[in-house]
Amino acid sequence: MVPLAAMVAAMGFSPSGVSATAQVYDQDSKVLAEARFDGSADTFTLVGRVAGDQPYLEYHYVRVDGSLQTGTHRGVPEAGTPVRFAHHFGAGRTVTFRVCVSGEHGFNPCSGTDAGENWTVAIA
Image (cartoon, rainbow, N blue to C red; front, side, top):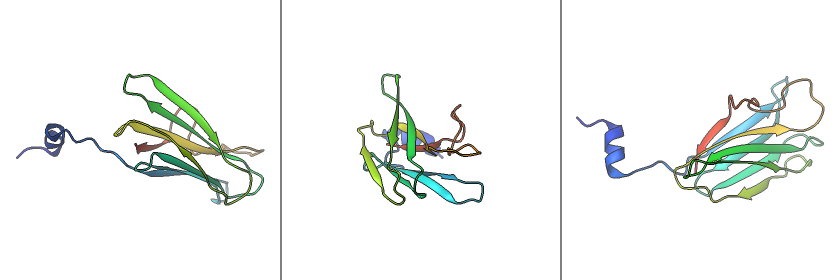
């Protein structure tokens, strides 16, 4: 019996188009903002859920040559208004991201830490 990983490697298949969503919550588990990466469209969608808080997302992407691409996209402070950001990441490449909100908060207003822990993973 041939392991699945060996079959995938032999066929030259690499996963692509894996979408994922990150959300940041307040202390009462209310969603403050969310960001979604649509792997098939190579697009981030960012939306805030609370008026006045400006959502933003940060992403990391390792290019084929091994260099790191990082970036930040900012949404709008109006609740429920989605903003889309198109990219041209290489197919099958991993994209990690987190969503945050600006403003005064007594807690970490991000879905992951600055150190890269708990970031959401998708595949372009």
